[in-house]
Image (tube, rainbow, N blue to C red; front, top):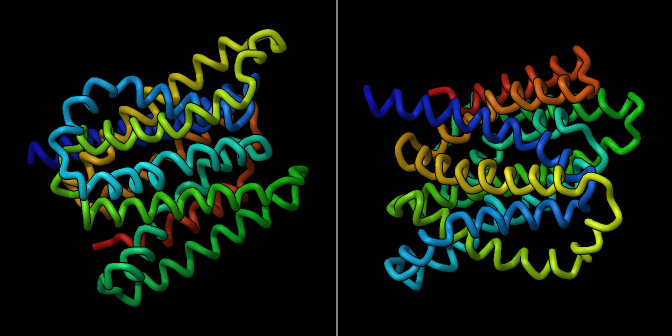
Length: 288
């Protein structure tokens, strides 16, 4: 019972943390480019966990390092850039809603790569989820936002998340959460450093009025939205399983919509209805 309560506590913390990530990206993008925000996010997360990397890298089998790096790329590296690029054109609330599609991709990759058993209701859930995403694009595209198709970058990011969930569940479940996160984020920060240095990062502080607010938002995004959240997420996969962990996407869009409304973004009833359709599909996919 204590473990179950702990799992639900982690679930709620992740919903709040990741749900707040989308508005932090928007704040970072007020002064920095999407590549700079994503790079700062990954570097700050890697630096925060550097002491743990130095401890765990010696305890990790060499043969597993490439798999952990791949997990870092899928779970943090690639999505960090995709989300930031997408949010240059779409609202943070829309990004949060589209992120709810992650569990569907987790099932798809489990079926395709690991021959997991499939039920008819799960196939129905996949179809309903895809229909909800298409409707959400149509609803958003009809409005004033001419760049709604940038949402496909978020869909690609959720595919990376889904593949990472399946990967961790089948190949890395025996490792400690802190071990996986510290090693993967060290390499993500290492890969992101040249991207930041080549982006004329220093000139931003001379050309913009409020770079420090954007820098603080980007660092907070890295420390909390990537470092701590990834640690909690890997722990949730180990203790509660991949499907339960992927269900964080139930709570995440609600938080993202709340922050979007506070920031003055437009969220209409039809978008909420589409989110409900997606969630219905996700429920059918994950229901015991």
